[in-house]
Length: 292
Image 1: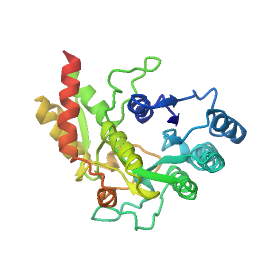
Image 2: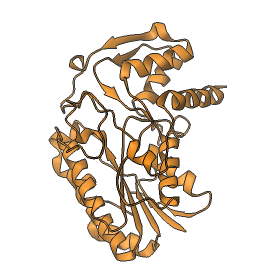
Image 3: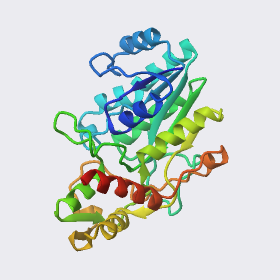
């Protein structure tokens, strides 16, 4: 089976390429050869690859910058996904696209499921929702909404001297370096371990689940302070941690304060993810092994 991975140099993309390469022929062109903003290039690359599965791990993730560069965000997160959906329709391939928790307004008090109508509050969030719509319109389109990704090899694979880690990865980096860490107390998330997301993606495809929208996160919810505290306790670094609120941060684009997602639909399709605490334990164990 040939699998085309778009965005294969990012945190999720690297883990996806590694996992599928174990038993598939993986094609993962660089951005030089596949610019999602170039419709003709997308069509050309997909036709040449003749994949059975296309997995889109690419995204414009600069949430604040998107407010000033809406066209760039829309081209990649929205219309680039439309191009991929069209290309997969032409070649009969399965299409997997990753969405975001940012599409919700953050005013809920229970985890969002797939039936909740999104209310994006920023340019980035709007661009991601547009991509969800285009991907879901593909005949064999899967949209997996993920959030607060961490791990997946970013801690050991620098790209041009820059680590690929996300929020939790950077927190743990700071803890291990003996630096102070601040955790937000008023933003609730469902932290998701990249290897678990990739494994769930593969299980969903191998199980022949019905195409459509799924929330793909580790189980449970917590504030960023809770997550940081759990990591600090396990590493013996609690003294380095201090609480802050979102108002203390200088951010141009609004973030949803409550954005935990429910993965019950995914579980009903036969794909269960461990809790975020279980994932954190495995992640930290790996970090400590690599440290020594």
